Image 1 (spheres, rainbow, N blue to C red):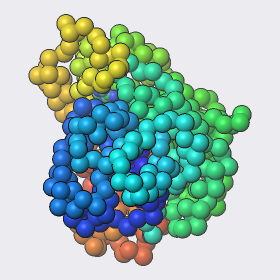
Image 2 (cartoon, protein in one colour):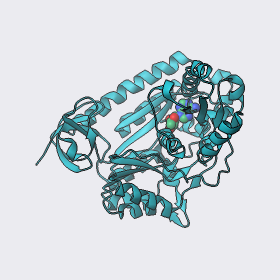
Image 3 (tube, rainbow, N blue to C red):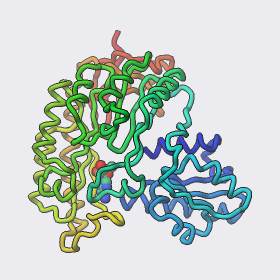
Image 4 (cartoon, helix red, strand yellow):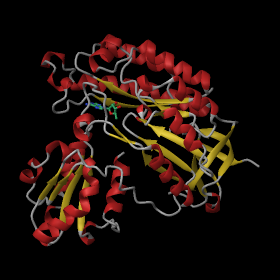
Length: 421
Ligand code: 5AD
């Protein structure tokens, strides 16, 4: 999501980028507020530009994204070298904002939610890219008790089907072969009577689009129609990112996730029945207020039961204004205990992921080649439909092609293989 917004910012300004901050006319730190570390990171990277502003008063320094939205004009007080604060929904307003700053030299805050032209700015597109994001939704209507997203990105707004398809087609014309639909709860997308399953099917009809991905799915919004679409349309990737957050019903209840562990397992079963071998990845939070050892063990047993292809796991981080942050202090799980749980969980999942990757050895996989590996010009990198990164010997000319690759090795993060003829 943030990568996508950074590319939109680049397009909004029609700007060239530079890796050297000393050469920049404008520096924008695009931020994430999902966990505490993410906003600390934003403040420390902004701090690094203080001296550049001192040496060059014409330099414009701004903060964008969810941390900008969260703290608004407080940031201008906190950081005197900052020229503007821009919320994630206000990116289309950026060009005007910069003009105003250049003309009047006054500092500005733009954090309103009611930006009409929400989807108008599409992201910068680098030539030769094989895979691209397409935003289908902004904001979120769920109210998970730990999550700051609804506060910083506002309520759910869905993009019209026609606009999504037009963007997908124009990307294909530029050489893209795979799109990833993105939204906070992407599968809750609906518009004018159409549901997410309809969107998947319509996208599958776009000529020369080889594969469709989507992220992030909300378990309760998975419908029979969506499962049918996945089953019927091979272009839809055999991977779903489906955050479960916890394996304990007590914790799921407190988190306001609106499903039980059993319900989640059933959805996974239905997905795997519809598309055998369907890869399921997830997000987990450990150390939620009041999480007992028993609750944590329930999460571990869920990981064992489901055998996720991969899991992103985090220690609970209290976010300002969320119900979870207001829990009484006697419910706090000690940081050392949360760290212990996180390490146990990650070690367990590491073995599962590696085992699943090793199990691919000997199979021929369809890999969409995305380009030459960063580390070795003779090696191509791509992904399988199940979202496994795969490296194999091949030339740059094969980039953008769907190739048959025989898997020779399965590692934790990737597969290795050779082109099969
Ligand atoms: N603390 C820890 N993890 C969080 N996430 C969201 N909010 C929090 C929080 N307050 C995690 C969830 C979500 C992922 C994007 O970040 O697991 O799915």
